[in-house]
Image (cartoon, rainbow over all chains, first blue to last red; front, side, top):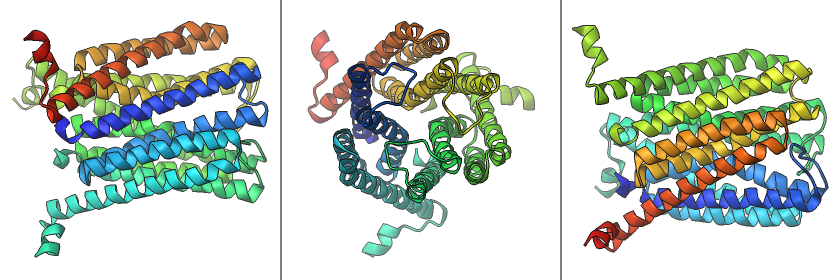
Length: 145
Length: 145
Length: 145
């Protein structure tokens, strides 16, 4: 069983490391700008770093859910590769947002695009499983027949 | 193995689509009310939409965790059906909260109720597994003996 | 298959119960301080409870991701035990933060420490799988040879 998920597990752990990096940046920014918890408002420089972390945290479960469905039902290697691309886009998003609000846009489009591809792969893979399982219809056989 | 999780996977992907819909509503509301990131405060109409998305995001990992435990340890079909009901209740919650704070209450009670049922199913299923695994006690056999 | 995940599933359900407890504390605090949704600012006593819940929610998917990778690729029993320790640390964190901002520090260090151990266990377990799977190198055999 681990054979079918080890690449997904590796990307998941890398994703956690990236989240940890984002959390640390917020802690450093809190010190740099003198904003102690539970306060979350401050100068735009702080709020951009804070919001970049919050946004990344909100998308993390969505990313993991799609990574694993795409990997289990479509193709593990492809899902893992897209997962790495997503983590790269998220890193660019965080660094861009820290610099200015507008610089977060290009990487957020990239990361959203990757998520939509993972979602399409998940949906196709699950649909294929439903068809072959319930209707005994094997689409790949049809295409190659 | 996919046989035991394909309904859970399908509901998971539908749940991600719903989260995507909520994120888009916040983006539209930011444009409509002229509230650029990283700002998160504004008129109550905006803050209600924003908070509805944040609350749904916070509950999403909890929902997935219970959906999958209930599906794996209790009954996949029942868990998936409850999952669809939860997603419907979340949609009503979002639309209600957008209209007014009080209109979020009925659907939030429904969605919480569904989560408690999923939690009970998970707990019962896991407890049954523990009993039959460690004490070799099969409760279903006892009941039908 | 359930044999390899039942302890992880049990800790996951306990974690959801803890999250439910934190959500309830915020609802009670909203009533006690008269802060109706969608408002999220108020006296420091309220904001500490609110931020303690938000922080715990942000870490919940990270915790689950590491719990499951460590349990699947390293050792289920150890991962579950560390999971229980994490949930205990989170409870101390919530109660400490409610009392004062400084009292959240010791338990947050404990909970972070547990997460880093889970991450190390996950990484080691996945690395071991990669080595034995791709290089046919069994590290444990080497060590005991």
